[in-house]
Length: 258
Ligand SMILES: Nc1ncnc2c1ncn2[C@@H]1O[C@H](COP(=O)(O)OP(=O)(O)OP(=O)(O)O)[C@@H](O)[C@H]1O
Ligand SMILES: [Mg+2]
Image (cartoon, protein in one colour):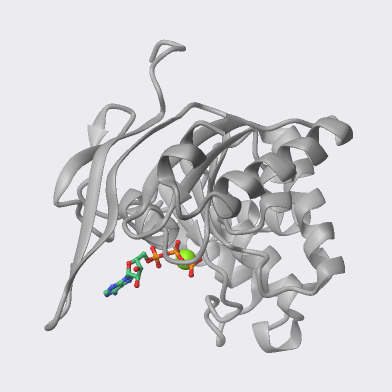
């Protein structure tokens, strides 16, 4: 793969939901590229289609128009090359320990032996700072700790891309900030590729290197923006994104050229 070829390409993707009464266009002709090592953010208000796009990349929803390619291959179904981490704390198997939760998919999807799977699982359990809880069950853990297990499980599969849908949204502010810092520290180590959904502008700027702004009804791309690590620039960017998303809402044209 040459450097200029994106890892993930989303081209003209329209996704609709059919309900008995309505046909809902959740996203309309969305385009974006995610490159190797990107921390790519889907940002926008509720209903703009962030989760829908994320699920389509995961292979759980098929677009009715356009296409999604991972390493040049059209995405048709879910696969271990795309691991998802959700917002909910109950995404772990309650009857399995932390280590077993992480090792499980390594045995089933990656076909590692039990010993190999447990060894790799422990490596990632340690990475997220849960070595002392490796043999605990999920009900013994706080919400933040459960999210760490879900992240360790996703990373242990060593997917081409990690898909995270508001993974920290249900955490208290302090834990949330700590988890954001941890995620960035993990990224510094391995430079994994992540597609991260959030509706928090501050979180998008902190976590992402690139940010796709979406507007709702139907979900469309409003802008694609580079993030910044400079605190003064970040404050300016936060204000600018806020204005683009909310202030000029009634007048689409004006918002687009802000
Ligand atoms: N299963 C479904 N059936 C019908 N409509 C749906 C379904 N899932 C989502 N939608 C609709 O599609 C649109 C996009 O929803 P989606 O969940 O992708 O938004 P979102 O940006 O993730 O919002 P939030 O920030 O609230 O999570 C919304 O109008 C929503 O009502
Ligand atoms: Mg959502």
